[in-house]
Length: 430
Image 1: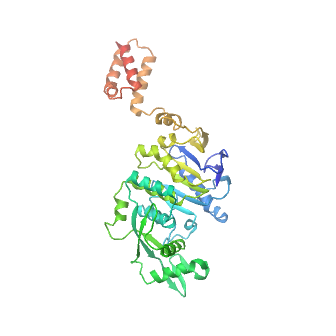
Image 2 (image 1 turned 180 degrees about the horizontal axis):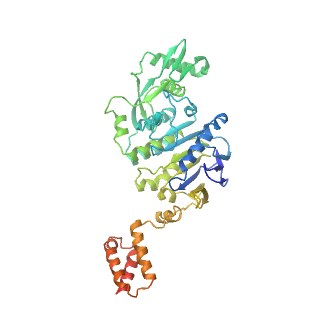
Image 3 (image 1 turned 90 degrees about the horizontal axis):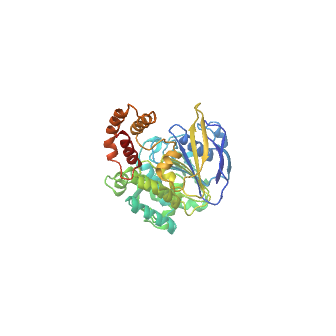
């Protein structure tokens, strides 16, 4: 799946991207000040990818696509912030009438649970489900997840509970989402569904079947049990939950780590397990809660998480110069959104700053006049204006301003260019 042109909600005209290599994975980075609708664009692209044509006229977010090649095999939305605009995955027990977000080809990986409650259990459930459904990942994926675990300190093993969310009704399965007609389930899977009924049917919703999961590959149960649980999860007949007993390993892993540790591990490990050819991947502010060193490494980790896939298109909205500056020179685009003098939203494709220093990225791509504090910049501007207007009769005033600046300059690194400027100005007043 490859997006070639799209519209910015509330913007003027279309944005066109180069065709490039359709078999390669592509990353389109979105930059812009707060209020330039980056998150709205991500949501519009998401809805355009999974909403039925009949529903588009009623959707909240306006259509984004002008032209795309192929349909995505799946849509994965990743967020590190609780106020993103992505819809959470609609799972069993969710009371929302609109079921398009329960589609098998959609996954939300982020901090919000159903009904927009902020809870890490959402990302834990998504992570465990991905490991359950891809219980034998490739050597490359398994190695990446183990490396990610070592980097973040987040463990690989979790105890989860498989909870039934069905009851029998005249030979069919009734769930909170509706009735599953057993006659409509494929013949090759009906035996596994019956196995679940026999195994879990006598359990109440407060009891569950325990499951031990290794995120890098492996589930402690026999192959038939594993296949049955996978089928049950596919049809919304079971839920995966962390153990209700406090102090369990799952509870500790979710609550005992920082937002950066858990966020980086849960999002990229889930992506590595779920990513497949021609995926559409939408990422909103991945730098949230990440130390600058991890921001600097994020783009490399992201590309490694998708390394066994082809034809994927990633849209990534960020405010991090470290992420932007570590983008590669291959299939990368940089789209800058801004408001013109009339308040209208405009966009431009810019060169990707491959290998640039963060200060240069901030000044050139984020339109910052300087990376120093605004107060210090104002002081320097006053001093330089004073010098430019001529020093006759003004040396005392300049000397006073330099004295105010002195403690700041003395605290600067030795190689800072402001030190040399300060010395030159001091020579002027002497």
